[in-house]
Image 1 (cartoon, rainbow, N blue to C red):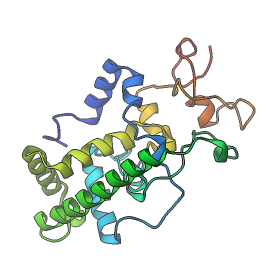
Image 2 (image 1 turned 60 degrees about the horizontal axis):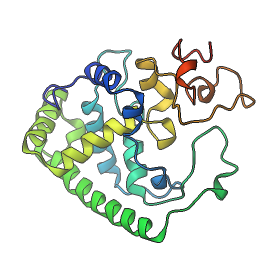
Image 3 (image 1 turned 30 degrees about the vertical axis):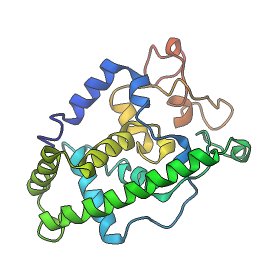
Length: 229
């Protein structure tokens, strides 16, 4: 992680606290990009390289800690690369998603072009990671992986910029986007929920994750993660 924007995960959490939860939530890609499951946009070898790379962007800092890969940042990126789907809101049930607004034709064309561009960026960048690691980035020692990623960061490559930004989004955005598995990053800095979300008090137990982390207003957040006071 050293040299990658000069932030450890703990430092990134501190910065998130400075800009506020709203700023952290703004990292998420638009819900328009959340599609139904599709065949992966990457080959199996590329998937391994991607997972190894995101794991070094936000690394585990001990045996009981988690990395970006552990909370699904790679899955978030794959969802982004999968293509344009329906607009929908997150929650424990999705029976009403069909009534939600769809992308306009212009926006659909625009996002389709952007996804196509990103697929090319990732395909070239992941191949470069393997080449710089002697053929298999995922199998390289962590120190070598960090050195390679730092070199790409210093060069200001489009691939590293996309990888870094998307990894941060996948770690710290709402789990509905595919990352932040089990709300682990929110728990790490005591964030009790997306204030733009909606609670579902009659669905599941009171301590269900969508009730604990899914939509408390600021005045209800005196005890982070504990719900209304």
